[in-house]
Length: 117
Image 1 (cartoon, helix red, strand yellow):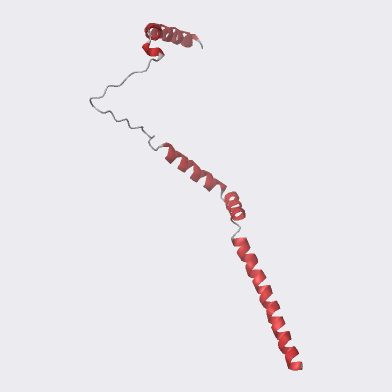
Image 2: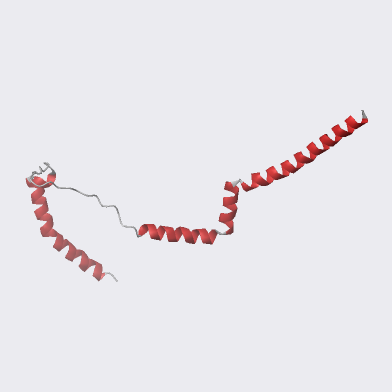
């Protein structure tokens, strides 16, 4: 009977020891897998580096060429124009009036802006 109790006690002690080791290991793994916390710590620690990288990435993205829409025109087909304001008589008169007054307005505004100290 004593041997059975000693064996049980040893098994219980080993299980308890293994549980404490596993709880310590799981807490370490839990800390390592907590990405939001790790990210905020790194962001606070190296804030100037992150801002510099963001500025460089923004500058590079601003230098990329813009998307151009490609238009394919087939020869032999006639394109119909819509009945917009520019194709009406009033639209043509407005275009003519604007083209005549635009230089005068520009000269007037230039003169006024150059007079201010």
